[in-house]
Image: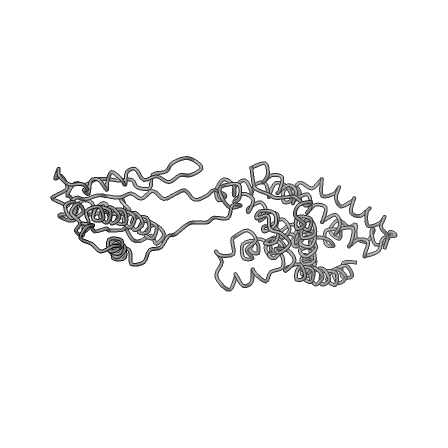
Length: 425
Protein backbone atom coordinates (compact mmCIF):
# COMPACT_ATOMS: atom_id res chain seq x y z
CA UNK A 1 0.00 0.00 0.00
CA UNK A 2 1.58 3.28 -1.16
CA UNK A 3 0.52 6.89 -0.72
CA UNK A 4 1.39 7.74 -4.32
CA UNK A 5 -0.81 4.92 -5.62
CA UNK A 6 -3.70 6.00 -3.39
CA UNK A 7 -3.43 9.63 -4.52
CA UNK A 8 -3.13 8.57 -8.16
CA UNK A 9 -6.32 6.52 -7.96
CA UNK A 10 -8.10 9.33 -6.12
CA UNK A 11 -7.01 11.90 -8.74
CA UNK A 12 -8.06 9.58 -11.58
CA UNK A 13 -11.46 9.03 -9.97
CA UNK A 14 -12.03 12.73 -9.28
CA UNK A 15 -11.27 13.57 -12.93
CA UNK A 16 -13.52 10.77 -14.14
CA UNK A 17 -16.42 11.94 -11.96
CA UNK A 18 -15.96 15.53 -13.14
CA UNK A 19 -16.65 14.33 -16.70
CA UNK A 20 -19.71 12.29 -15.72
CA UNK A 21 -22.79 14.47 -16.22
CA UNK A 22 -25.07 12.16 -14.25
CA UNK A 23 -22.68 12.10 -11.29
CA UNK A 24 -22.43 15.89 -11.35
CA UNK A 25 -26.21 16.12 -11.40
CA UNK A 26 -26.52 14.16 -8.15
CA UNK A 27 -23.57 15.90 -6.49
CA UNK A 28 -24.25 19.51 -7.54
CA UNK A 29 -27.54 20.01 -9.39
CA UNK A 30 -29.74 17.79 -7.21
CA UNK A 31 -29.02 19.61 -3.91
CA UNK A 32 -29.47 22.99 -5.60
CA UNK A 33 -32.82 21.88 -7.02
CA UNK A 34 -34.01 20.44 -3.70
CA UNK A 35 -32.91 23.49 -1.72
CA UNK A 36 -34.59 25.85 -4.19
CA UNK A 37 -37.88 23.98 -3.89
CA UNK A 38 -37.56 23.84 -0.11
CA UNK A 39 -36.78 27.54 0.23
CA UNK A 40 -39.73 28.49 -1.96
CA UNK A 41 -42.29 26.05 -0.55
CA UNK A 42 -41.39 25.10 3.02
CA UNK A 43 -38.70 27.38 4.43
CA UNK A 44 -41.17 30.16 5.11
CA UNK A 45 -42.94 30.82 8.40
CA UNK A 46 -46.59 29.80 8.14
CA UNK A 47 -48.68 32.93 7.57
CA UNK A 48 -51.23 33.85 10.23
CA UNK A 49 -54.68 32.40 9.66
CA UNK A 50 -57.39 34.86 8.67
CA UNK A 51 -60.73 33.62 10.02
CA UNK A 52 -63.79 34.43 7.93
CA UNK A 53 -66.53 35.19 10.45
CA UNK A 54 -70.21 35.82 9.86
CA UNK A 55 -71.84 38.19 12.38
CA UNK A 56 -75.56 37.99 13.21
CA UNK A 57 -77.41 40.44 15.48
CA UNK A 58 -80.40 38.83 17.19
CA UNK A 59 -79.84 41.56 19.76
CA UNK A 60 -82.76 44.01 19.64
CA UNK A 61 -80.83 46.47 21.81
CA UNK A 62 -77.87 46.78 19.45
CA UNK A 63 -78.99 50.19 18.13
CA UNK A 64 -79.92 51.76 21.47
CA UNK A 65 -78.19 55.09 21.54
CA UNK A 66 -77.60 55.39 25.30
CA UNK A 67 -75.42 52.26 25.72
CA UNK A 68 -71.70 52.42 26.44
CA UNK A 69 -70.91 49.11 24.76
CA UNK A 70 -72.79 47.24 22.00
CA UNK A 71 -72.37 44.18 19.80
CA UNK A 72 -71.49 46.45 16.89
CA UNK A 73 -68.60 47.84 18.92
CA UNK A 74 -67.23 44.30 19.10
CA UNK A 75 -67.60 43.90 15.32
CA UNK A 76 -65.67 47.14 14.79
CA UNK A 77 -62.92 45.85 17.08
CA UNK A 78 -62.74 42.53 15.19
CA UNK A 79 -62.25 44.40 11.92
CA UNK A 80 -59.18 46.14 13.35
CA UNK A 81 -57.34 43.13 14.78
CA UNK A 82 -54.02 42.58 12.95
CA UNK A 83 -50.96 40.39 13.34
CA UNK A 84 -47.50 41.70 12.50
CA UNK A 85 -45.48 39.51 10.07
CA UNK A 86 -42.30 39.93 8.03
CA UNK A 87 -44.48 40.86 5.04
CA UNK A 88 -46.52 43.41 7.02
CA UNK A 89 -49.84 43.42 8.84
CA UNK A 90 -52.31 40.56 8.31
CA UNK A 91 -55.96 40.75 9.34
CA UNK A 92 -57.06 38.14 11.87
CA UNK A 93 -60.77 38.36 11.03
CA UNK A 94 -62.55 38.78 7.73
CA UNK A 95 -65.96 39.95 8.94
CA UNK A 96 -69.22 39.50 7.02
CA UNK A 97 -72.34 41.01 8.61
CA UNK A 98 -75.72 39.29 8.11
CA UNK A 99 -77.97 41.61 10.11
CA UNK A 100 -80.46 39.37 11.94
CA UNK A 101 -80.44 36.57 9.31
CA UNK A 102 -79.16 33.64 11.34
CA UNK A 103 -80.38 30.98 8.91
CA UNK A 104 -78.58 32.58 5.97
CA UNK A 105 -75.32 32.80 7.92
CA UNK A 106 -75.54 29.14 8.98
CA UNK A 107 -76.26 28.08 5.38
CA UNK A 108 -73.08 29.84 4.26
CA UNK A 109 -71.19 28.17 7.12
CA UNK A 110 -72.38 24.72 6.02
CA UNK A 111 -71.51 25.57 2.42
CA UNK A 112 -67.92 26.30 3.44
CA UNK A 113 -68.12 30.04 2.72
CA UNK A 114 -67.42 30.91 6.37
CA UNK A 115 -65.15 29.54 9.07
CA UNK A 116 -67.44 30.55 11.92
CA UNK A 117 -70.65 32.40 12.77
CA UNK A 118 -71.08 34.61 15.85
CA UNK A 119 -74.68 35.23 16.92
CA UNK A 120 -75.24 37.99 19.50
CA UNK A 121 -78.37 36.98 21.40
CA UNK A 122 -81.13 39.34 22.46
CA UNK A 123 -80.23 42.02 25.02
CA UNK A 124 -76.50 41.38 24.52
CA UNK A 125 -75.67 45.09 24.26
CA UNK A 126 -77.77 46.28 27.19
CA UNK A 127 -76.49 43.48 29.42
CA UNK A 128 -72.87 44.21 28.48
CA UNK A 129 -73.39 47.91 29.25
CA UNK A 130 -75.21 47.44 32.59
CA UNK A 131 -72.99 44.83 34.20
CA UNK A 132 -75.02 41.71 33.43
CA UNK A 133 -74.00 38.56 31.56
CA UNK A 134 -74.05 39.19 27.80
CA UNK A 135 -74.62 36.01 25.80
CA UNK A 136 -73.49 35.03 22.31
CA UNK A 137 -73.43 31.78 20.37
CA UNK A 138 -70.48 30.75 18.21
CA UNK A 139 -70.72 28.13 15.46
CA UNK A 140 -67.46 26.74 14.05
CA UNK A 141 -67.23 24.87 10.75
CA UNK A 142 -66.10 21.26 11.22
CA UNK A 143 -64.72 18.70 8.78
CA UNK A 144 -61.15 20.00 8.74
CA UNK A 145 -59.52 19.36 12.11
CA UNK A 146 -56.77 21.96 11.58
CA UNK A 147 -59.11 24.77 10.48
CA UNK A 148 -61.60 23.91 13.22
CA UNK A 149 -58.96 23.99 15.96
CA UNK A 150 -57.42 27.24 14.71
CA UNK A 151 -60.80 28.97 14.32
CA UNK A 152 -61.93 27.81 17.75
CA UNK A 153 -58.67 28.94 19.35
CA UNK A 154 -58.66 32.37 17.67
CA UNK A 155 -62.27 33.16 18.59
CA UNK A 156 -61.86 31.80 22.12
CA UNK A 157 -58.80 33.97 22.69
CA UNK A 158 -60.53 37.04 21.25
CA UNK A 159 -63.65 36.73 23.41
CA UNK A 160 -61.63 35.77 26.50
CA UNK A 161 -59.59 38.94 26.05
CA UNK A 162 -62.75 40.96 25.43
CA UNK A 163 -64.37 39.52 28.57
CA UNK A 164 -61.27 40.38 30.61
CA UNK A 165 -61.31 43.99 29.40
CA UNK A 166 -65.01 44.36 30.22
CA UNK A 167 -64.45 42.88 33.69
CA UNK A 168 -61.57 45.29 34.31
CA UNK A 169 -63.71 48.25 33.27
CA UNK A 170 -66.61 47.16 35.51
CA UNK A 171 -64.36 46.68 38.54
CA UNK A 172 -62.72 50.06 37.92
CA UNK A 173 -66.11 51.81 37.81
CA UNK A 174 -67.22 50.11 41.04
CA UNK A 175 -63.94 51.00 42.74
CA UNK A 176 -64.39 54.66 41.86
CA UNK A 177 -67.90 54.71 43.32
CA UNK A 178 -67.20 53.03 46.66
CA UNK A 179 -68.28 55.19 49.66
CA UNK A 180 -64.85 55.22 51.29
CA UNK A 181 -66.06 57.09 54.37
CA UNK A 182 -68.35 54.15 55.20
CA UNK A 183 -65.70 51.42 54.82
CA UNK A 184 -63.08 50.35 57.41
CA UNK A 185 -59.44 51.02 56.43
CA UNK A 186 -58.23 48.49 53.89
CA UNK A 187 -61.74 47.13 53.27
CA UNK A 188 -62.04 48.78 49.87
CA UNK A 189 -58.93 47.06 48.52
CA UNK A 190 -60.08 43.73 49.95
CA UNK A 191 -63.43 44.07 48.15
CA UNK A 192 -61.68 44.97 44.90
CA UNK A 193 -59.42 41.94 45.15
CA UNK A 194 -62.42 39.75 45.96
CA UNK A 195 -64.21 40.98 42.82
CA UNK A 196 -61.11 40.26 40.78
CA UNK A 197 -61.13 36.75 42.20
CA UNK A 198 -64.73 36.33 41.04
CA UNK A 199 -63.87 37.61 37.57
CA UNK A 200 -60.63 35.63 37.21
CA UNK A 201 -60.55 32.55 39.48
CA UNK A 202 -57.42 31.42 37.64
CA UNK A 203 -55.26 34.21 36.27
CA UNK A 204 -52.72 32.93 33.77
CA UNK A 205 -50.51 34.52 31.15
CA UNK A 206 -49.22 32.81 28.02
CA UNK A 207 -46.13 33.99 26.19
CA UNK A 208 -44.66 32.57 22.99
CA UNK A 209 -40.91 31.98 23.02
CA UNK A 210 -39.40 30.99 19.66
CA UNK A 211 -35.72 29.98 19.24
CA UNK A 212 -33.98 32.95 17.65
CA UNK A 213 -32.40 30.77 14.97
CA UNK A 214 -35.81 29.63 13.75
CA UNK A 215 -37.35 33.07 13.69
CA UNK A 216 -38.21 33.94 10.13
CA UNK A 217 -36.94 32.60 6.85
CA UNK A 218 -33.22 32.68 7.65
CA UNK A 219 -33.45 30.09 10.42
CA UNK A 220 -35.71 27.77 8.44
CA UNK A 221 -33.42 27.98 5.42
CA UNK A 222 -30.48 27.14 7.64
CA UNK A 223 -32.35 24.08 8.91
CA UNK A 224 -33.00 22.85 5.36
CA UNK A 225 -29.43 23.63 4.27
CA UNK A 226 -27.99 21.27 6.88
CA UNK A 227 -30.73 18.75 6.08
CA UNK A 228 -29.67 18.75 2.42
CA UNK A 229 -26.06 18.29 3.46
CA UNK A 230 -27.14 15.19 5.38
CA UNK A 231 -29.13 13.94 2.38
CA UNK A 232 -26.03 14.25 0.20
CA UNK A 233 -23.95 12.30 2.70
CA UNK A 234 -26.64 9.61 2.65
CA UNK A 235 -27.48 9.38 -1.06
CA UNK A 236 -24.08 10.09 -2.61
CA UNK A 237 -22.20 8.15 0.07
CA UNK A 238 -24.30 5.05 -0.60
CA UNK A 239 -23.82 5.42 -4.36
CA UNK A 240 -20.05 5.89 -4.04
CA UNK A 241 -19.65 2.77 -1.94
CA UNK A 242 -22.09 0.67 -3.97
CA UNK A 243 -20.39 1.37 -7.32
CA UNK A 244 -16.78 1.34 -6.10
CA UNK A 245 -15.85 -2.09 -7.49
CA UNK A 246 -18.61 -2.94 -9.96
CA UNK A 247 -18.02 0.29 -11.89
CA UNK A 248 -14.39 -0.66 -12.53
CA UNK A 249 -15.50 -4.17 -13.49
CA UNK A 250 -18.06 -2.82 -15.98
CA UNK A 251 -15.40 -0.58 -17.52
CA UNK A 252 -13.07 -3.60 -17.91
CA UNK A 253 -10.41 -1.72 -15.93
CA UNK A 254 -10.46 -3.73 -12.71
CA UNK A 255 -8.11 -6.50 -13.88
CA UNK A 256 -5.68 -3.99 -15.37
CA UNK A 257 -5.60 -2.05 -12.11
CA UNK A 258 -4.91 -5.19 -10.12
CA UNK A 259 -2.19 -6.21 -12.62
CA UNK A 260 -0.44 -2.87 -12.09
CA UNK A 261 1.67 -2.26 -8.98
CA UNK A 262 -1.51 -1.31 -7.13
CA UNK A 263 -2.88 -3.36 -4.26
CA UNK A 264 -6.52 -3.89 -3.28
CA UNK A 265 -6.09 -1.51 -0.34
CA UNK A 266 -4.72 1.19 -2.62
CA UNK A 267 -7.85 0.92 -4.75
CA UNK A 268 -10.15 0.99 -1.71
CA UNK A 269 -8.47 3.96 -0.04
CA UNK A 270 -8.02 5.87 -3.30
CA UNK A 271 -11.66 5.53 -4.24
CA UNK A 272 -12.75 6.32 -0.69
CA UNK A 273 -10.61 9.46 -0.76
CA UNK A 274 -12.07 10.61 -4.09
CA UNK A 275 -15.57 9.93 -2.77
CA UNK A 276 -14.88 12.03 0.33
CA UNK A 277 -13.58 14.85 -1.90
CA UNK A 278 -16.83 14.89 -3.86
CA UNK A 279 -18.92 14.65 -0.70
CA UNK A 280 -16.99 17.63 0.65
CA UNK A 281 -17.66 19.55 -2.57
CA UNK A 282 -21.36 18.67 -2.39
CA UNK A 283 -21.52 19.82 1.25
CA UNK A 284 -19.89 23.12 0.31
CA UNK A 285 -22.37 23.52 -2.55
CA UNK A 286 -25.26 23.03 -0.13
CA UNK A 287 -23.91 25.46 2.46
CA UNK A 288 -22.83 28.04 -0.11
CA UNK A 289 -26.18 27.93 -1.88
CA UNK A 290 -28.01 28.21 1.43
CA UNK A 291 -25.94 31.24 2.41
CA UNK A 292 -26.69 32.82 -0.99
CA UNK A 293 -30.38 32.59 -0.10
CA UNK A 294 -29.77 34.16 3.30
CA UNK A 295 -29.76 30.97 5.39
CA UNK A 296 -28.52 31.45 8.94
CA UNK A 297 -25.37 29.34 9.22
CA UNK A 298 -22.89 29.86 12.06
CA UNK A 299 -19.19 29.20 11.51
CA UNK A 300 -16.83 30.71 14.08
CA UNK A 301 -14.32 27.94 14.96
CA UNK A 302 -12.10 30.35 16.90
CA UNK A 303 -15.00 31.45 19.10
CA UNK A 304 -16.91 28.17 19.34
CA UNK A 305 -14.79 24.98 19.54
CA UNK A 306 -17.79 22.91 18.41
CA UNK A 307 -17.54 24.52 14.97
CA UNK A 308 -14.07 23.01 14.56
CA UNK A 309 -15.65 19.55 14.86
CA UNK A 310 -17.98 20.12 11.89
CA UNK A 311 -15.46 18.72 9.33
CA UNK A 312 -14.95 15.70 11.61
CA UNK A 313 -18.70 15.04 11.71
CA UNK A 314 -18.94 15.38 7.92
CA UNK A 315 -15.98 13.01 7.48
CA UNK A 316 -17.57 10.39 9.73
CA UNK A 317 -20.88 10.71 7.90
CA UNK A 318 -19.16 10.20 4.55
CA UNK A 319 -17.17 7.17 5.71
CA UNK A 320 -20.23 5.66 7.38
CA UNK A 321 -22.41 5.84 4.27
CA UNK A 322 -19.57 4.71 1.99
CA UNK A 323 -19.22 1.61 4.16
CA UNK A 324 -22.96 0.97 3.96
CA UNK A 325 -22.74 1.39 0.19
CA UNK A 326 -19.98 -1.24 0.04
CA UNK A 327 -22.33 -3.64 1.81
CA UNK A 328 -24.98 -2.91 -0.83
CA UNK A 329 -22.49 -3.75 -3.60
CA UNK A 330 -22.50 -7.39 -2.48
CA UNK A 331 -25.91 -7.94 -4.09
CA UNK A 332 -25.37 -5.78 -7.19
CA UNK A 333 -24.14 -7.28 -10.45
CA UNK A 334 -23.72 -4.08 -12.48
CA UNK A 335 -22.88 -0.46 -11.75
CA UNK A 336 -26.38 0.62 -12.85
CA UNK A 337 -27.91 -1.97 -10.56
CA UNK A 338 -25.70 -0.84 -7.66
CA UNK A 339 -26.55 2.82 -8.25
CA UNK A 340 -30.26 2.05 -8.52
CA UNK A 341 -30.19 -0.05 -5.36
CA UNK A 342 -28.36 2.72 -3.48
CA UNK A 343 -31.01 5.21 -4.58
CA UNK A 344 -33.84 2.82 -3.69
CA UNK A 345 -32.45 2.45 -0.17
CA UNK A 346 -31.30 6.04 0.33
CA UNK A 347 -34.44 7.81 -0.88
CA UNK A 348 -36.80 6.33 1.76
CA UNK A 349 -34.13 6.72 4.45
CA UNK A 350 -33.90 10.47 3.87
CA UNK A 351 -37.54 10.75 4.97
CA UNK A 352 -37.71 7.94 7.55
CA UNK A 353 -34.63 8.91 9.57
CA UNK A 354 -35.47 12.53 10.33
CA UNK A 355 -32.69 13.84 8.10
CA UNK A 356 -34.95 15.63 5.64
CA UNK A 357 -38.27 15.49 7.48
CA UNK A 358 -38.51 16.70 11.10
CA UNK A 359 -38.60 13.74 13.45
CA UNK A 360 -41.72 14.98 15.22
CA UNK A 361 -43.67 14.32 12.01
CA UNK A 362 -42.75 10.62 12.05
CA UNK A 363 -44.80 7.87 13.73
CA UNK A 364 -43.43 6.82 17.11
CA UNK A 365 -41.65 3.61 15.93
CA UNK A 366 -39.89 5.56 13.18
CA UNK A 367 -38.90 8.28 15.66
CA UNK A 368 -37.18 5.62 17.74
CA UNK A 369 -35.40 4.35 14.61
CA UNK A 370 -34.42 7.89 13.60
CA UNK A 371 -33.00 8.64 17.04
CA UNK A 372 -30.82 5.52 16.81
CA UNK A 373 -29.67 6.00 13.20
CA UNK A 374 -26.02 7.17 13.35
CA UNK A 375 -26.21 9.58 10.42
CA UNK A 376 -29.23 11.26 12.03
CA UNK A 377 -27.14 11.82 15.16
CA UNK A 378 -24.51 13.52 13.02
CA UNK A 379 -27.04 15.71 11.19
CA UNK A 380 -28.74 16.67 14.47
CA UNK A 381 -25.36 17.67 15.91
CA UNK A 382 -24.58 19.69 12.77
CA UNK A 383 -27.92 21.48 13.03
CA UNK A 384 -27.40 22.22 16.70
CA UNK A 385 -23.94 23.67 16.07
CA UNK A 386 -24.40 25.43 12.73
CA UNK A 387 -28.02 26.61 12.99
CA UNK A 388 -28.55 26.97 16.75
CA UNK A 389 -24.91 27.94 17.46
CA UNK A 390 -24.70 25.32 20.23
CA UNK A 391 -21.41 24.44 21.87
CA UNK A 392 -19.58 21.22 22.61
CA UNK A 393 -22.51 20.00 24.69
CA UNK A 394 -24.33 19.25 21.42
CA UNK A 395 -21.47 17.22 19.93
CA UNK A 396 -19.60 15.42 22.71
CA UNK A 397 -22.51 13.19 23.86
CA UNK A 398 -22.97 11.71 20.36
CA UNK A 399 -19.30 11.61 19.39
CA UNK A 400 -18.49 8.16 20.90
CA UNK A 401 -21.53 6.58 19.23
CA UNK A 402 -20.83 8.12 15.84
CA UNK A 403 -17.16 7.10 15.98
CA UNK A 404 -18.17 3.54 16.86
CA UNK A 405 -20.81 3.49 14.10
CA UNK A 406 -18.27 4.79 11.57
CA UNK A 407 -15.78 2.06 12.49
CA UNK A 408 -18.46 -0.65 12.35
CA UNK A 409 -20.05 0.50 9.08
CA UNK A 410 -16.79 1.10 7.26
CA UNK A 411 -15.25 -2.05 8.77
CA UNK A 412 -18.14 -4.17 7.48
CA UNK A 413 -17.82 -2.34 4.18
CA UNK A 414 -14.15 -3.36 3.95
CA UNK A 415 -15.12 -7.01 4.45
CA UNK A 416 -17.78 -6.66 1.76
CA UNK A 417 -15.21 -4.99 -0.53
CA UNK A 418 -12.89 -8.00 -0.22
CA UNK A 419 -15.72 -10.38 -1.13
CA UNK A 420 -16.89 -8.31 -4.12
CA UNK A 421 -13.33 -7.77 -5.36
CA UNK A 422 -12.50 -11.47 -5.18
CA UNK A 423 -15.74 -12.31 -6.97
CA UNK A 424 -15.11 -9.72 -9.70
CA UNK A 425 -11.59 -10.80 -10.65
